[in-house]
Amino acid sequence: MSIHVIGVDAYALGWVGVELRDGQFGRAMLASTLYEIVAGSSGAAVIGVDIPLGMLPDRWRAADSLAADQLGPRRSSVFRVPPRAVWQEADFAAANRVCREMTGAGLSRQSWALRPKLLEANAIWERHPGLLFEAHPEVSFREMSGEPLAYAKKTWTGQARRRELLARHGIVLPDHLGPAGQAPPDDILDAAAVAWSAHRMATGTAHSHPSPPEENDGAAIAIWY
Image (cartoon, rainbow, N blue to C red):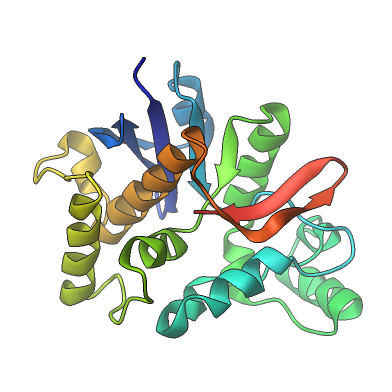
């Protein structure tokens, strides 16, 4: 039976997905909402998402600091996820204030900008336990390479290295992706890396930061790769 998985990355206009079948490229897709990808994923064993899934009630998550520690020069690609109450605020100023009150540190505007997609993904994750899981492309690429990547994903050298790593692990991205080819190259590469981790999840070979995952209200919180 074919193993069908999807890796999804958030980008400026919505979400980009890469589908794998038996670990090899199947298709790429664009959607304005994550729900569109989930609704059209019939038969997918798991869907990996490059967005934080699960917040703790009173502290930062261990997953983020552990993942960042593994990435060397790419550590800034992981942002710390503050407690759930921070995300329930309506504007950045209030969220930043609550974050400082609860953790002693502020919230970055970059993190806050992800709030709509974070809330969207978490609502789906809570409704469909076992289908979605959290991955991080730089953690996935680091595992593929065996060492932190020297060049950022938006550089020519960095993109060539990531495409090479994917191909080495059986994911050969075609030059022509149809409508999905409108997405930025680094987002396609990120979705493919998350799909690689999704295949590992489906085959029971994935690892996690932390291991075992943290738990909150019965939900396991971790970055899988």
